[in-house]
Image (cartoon, rainbow, N blue to C red):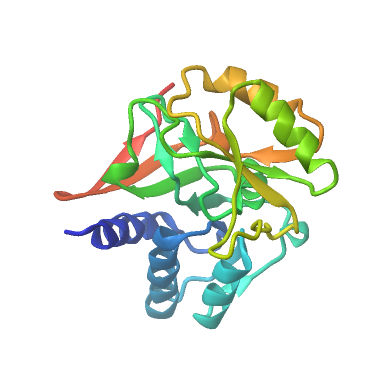
Length: 228
């Protein structure tokens, strides 16, 4: 199977965790695209009654068009289950997310959810985080000051740009600064540092959040419960 097929395998297996009456959190990205299709199919075929909160307008539009009832996060009192992708997951079940620049919204939904499932193809499972650049979301006011602060700590920051060289904006209208670290030996220490940086709204370290990982492998979907 190619990478796209592996993503689909993981997504379709994760869709089986959805139960009637749930309020879901739906993530963002190519693997979640397959997830939304699989959940919508269950809604049609099994008559499931669910509602969902999306972490991006793209996911919300797709889910709504397929008949899934969508809600704003401010209009729900809880989220039973959030299913989302990840860019890297290490052997301690810590993750990096934000390749799609939606990590702030994704983290808000994840931390509101009673349970979190990540769906990935097997290439996303690593021993140590950091090969994938770590995204941060930075407000435009003073963004150069934040950049220089990150640079002074040898975190190798780069503003994320599009094909025309223009700085990419998040759903919130902010910039993304990616940290090209290569290896993150102490993710909790880095999290503490980034949490304290004024002007840095959020970062893509998702630590101690996931409950279950569903991995698409050449042998099918593998369900792994996080152990810490």
